[in-house]
Image (cartoon, rainbow, N blue to C red):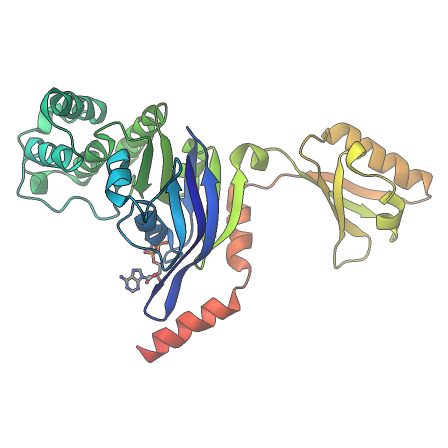
Amino acid sequence: MLEVTHLSRCYGEFKAVDDVSFTIGKGEIVGLLGHNGAGKTTIMKMLSGYLEPDTGSVNIDGIDMADKPKTLQRQLGYLPENLPVYGEMTVADYLDYAASLKGLDGDEKVAEIRRAIKATELADKLHARIHTLSRGYKQRVGVAQAILGRPRLLILDEPTNGLDPTQTRQMRALIKEIAREATVILSTHIMQEVEALCDRVLIIHRGQLAVDERLERLRNANRIWLETSATDAREVLGRLGKDEGIESIEAMAKVGQFRIALTEDANLRSTSAVIARTLIAAGGELYRLQPEQQDLESLFRQVNESQAPAQQKQQEALENAA
Ligand SMILES: Nc1ncnc2c1ncn2[C@@H]1O[C@H](COP(=O)(O)OP(=O)(O)OP(=O)(O)O)[C@@H](O)[C@H]1O
């Protein structure tokens, strides 16, 4: 459905997006997570065709954004970070205008506007001017224009930004509803948002794609932490492999500590049992054998603690020069 290949974009000397590639299948809800300034908005602007990449390509259902931007823009819905700026327009006029921009007309246009109003529960506000609306309602107007024309791909930049908890809940329910028919990519820095909504997370760190992981896989324990007297445990356990559910064994800095990565289809109990049996048979003592679950928050912390010195230095130099 969406194929992003080696996407890069600079602002002046600063590389805001650096060689990002990923694909998103039909019907997925994917969260783009990253700290402030990580490059999420820049990526979304390129996905929606509003910003040209310096290098790389965005391809939707086999069509390249660089070749047919207008055709693709009509098939996608985009909620930009900054909401519609036509504050003097009424909600009804604005949606009519947005529908025309998407190439809708006649009965189809009327039906689509009605559908978007219903989905976003905007009927009470149709004749209100947009600048008089609360943040939550403005956000709904933004989503309403994004879903006009039943886009197959919906790009939402921080859809719950500034919403109160009730509005946030409603917005998340709306996104789930929309995702029944469309592929959704949304950016946020709220981890609970990704956990509540998404099938998959992409973590962007200083312009680069640092993690591409399914949430389901994160929820499953996929590693075992081992502490043993057998300092040669890697060799002892080296006989075991994928058949026993072991992907790799990493020795930690402290002697006798190991981290064992499991295969995707490993059975935690039987793999743990075989590790314990093998070590004890080799004369080792077992001090700790513990499943390790990686939650999104710790993964995010790990990514942000890791260094990307070249880009950090580049940003610092640019900030100092400014
Ligand atoms: N028009 C611009 N000119 C110069 N630099 C820019 C411009 N837009 C963004 N940047 C810089 O590019 C980097 C990435 O910005 P971007 O808005 O894509 O990040 P983000 O992940 O969406 O951040 P946030 O979570 O704060 O919205 C930042 O360092 C930002 O300062």
